[in-house]
Amino acid sequence: MSQPIIIPAWQRPHWQASDEEILLQFYVFGKFEAVRVPSADYGSSGLPPGIEAVNHNHASLRQWEGYPLKGGMGRMFKDDAPEAYKIAVDAPEVIVVRGTLKDSEATGYLRDTLGVLAGMLDIGGVAILDPQTLSLLDADAWRRRFLVRDGAPIRNYILIMRDSEQEPDHSWIHTRGMRKFGRPDISIRGVPDALSDRAGILCERLVELEALGAHFVDGQPVEIDGLGAGLVAHLRGGLDDEDFNNTFVEFHWPA
Image (cartoon, rainbow, N blue to C red; front, side):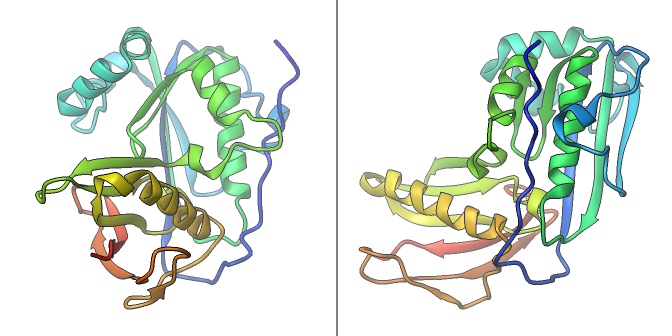
């Protein structure tokens, strides 16, 4: 194996304290060696306080109500990532990594957790599932996404989706996964299909601002170069919201 890549942490220059909580949750599938996870190889000092890792017999976990490889989510993974799905389903063990943290002015917590996940792949892990971004990756694909020299882009940590609106020829651009940063997800409604790529780039910029600590206030105007009329932030949602499982900031594309 090549020299491990040190996972960097970054400061959040726009950070202000909030009541938001950071949530991390991952499922690591495999057959694990009974050794210490080599997280230090990736710059991690181990899981941060508040995040736990519990090893389960896969057969027992299948009976759990929240088991992610069954039901509608399981069918989605089977269709979207059939090879990773088969590897995960056939694995005899599953380590569930999960916990919450207070909002933080730096992302050392994320570096430390990802370093542990990378180490788990080195001792028998074969796939990692992230329910927040609806992703299931085999070990090589996960390493390509997150073990990037000088750090993976923020875009790799979240999911940006495009869905059709009821209004013909219009799209809804929205995210999942911002609870990793203790921030609301982003929703942009009423985007003309011809401008959906531009809206996707804007969504990525808003996500990066939040990942760097920024907060949006309800009713806050947001000026966008070249858009003409600006956008207005509206705070919505909650942890039980079926689309986000999170609060979200909603914008409406100007007519």
